[in-house]
Length: 331
Image 1: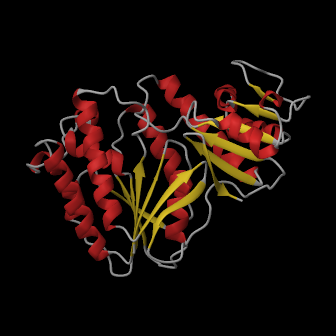
Image 2 (image 1 turned 90 degrees about the vertical axis):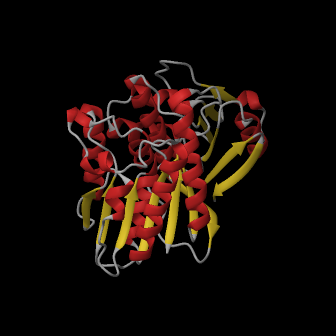
């Protein structure tokens, strides 16, 4: 069984993928890590993911390139989680970008890795295909980075082309494809009954409806129609807003900007609790698209994604609006 799990930054895709592996019942769980420890930010992200996997029985193997994956021996009956596809593709396309001056012998020895997007795509796809043959269960985490615009060129465009090509090929190979939005899994393709559980915190149900979607997608209008109220009753947050207690309005919009002011997970939880007092809460998706170059912007995007997951877990219903069309992804 092969499952492709995709989603934006801080969407809950990693937690969901881990839940799938843990739900297989296989005794041998192997985590294939593809992120190189580039500096303190990457090291912190690696530490965070290791903490997420703690006490779940995973054996961690660092596999930065397709060549490494092709050389693996996977014990029979093992469940394997490969995370993530975006880093693996980047490592294949840009093998010269080494961490702290250390040379990756496998990448340097692989002649396809520096031969352009098409050859790199073939290398990754063939490696995953070989890996699939050895696993009782294979779950691959992929990044949704294609919704941030179209004005790209050079290496960024080559990378997006590569990741898109590989993602499409692996989706075709997979028995199941799941997109995770705000911690809610949306099954796009399924060859059998879905396994696993919704990721994120334990659900705290309320009568709040959570509405999300891209910028300018018609979220506020859709939310007003859903509740049968005027759109004016849904107030819009301002930057630096402090008082978010429920007042005369039935709903509150653009709450993702509030996440940046939270210092840690506890403050994000407290913010989500306060926002859950509203009848409807609206937050824009910010986790899709190319990763921002500015560290502060990356941190704000991570916090916004985490807040969205917390709100979705607390909501009685989650609605995603795209091009003005509302889709209920949790009820």
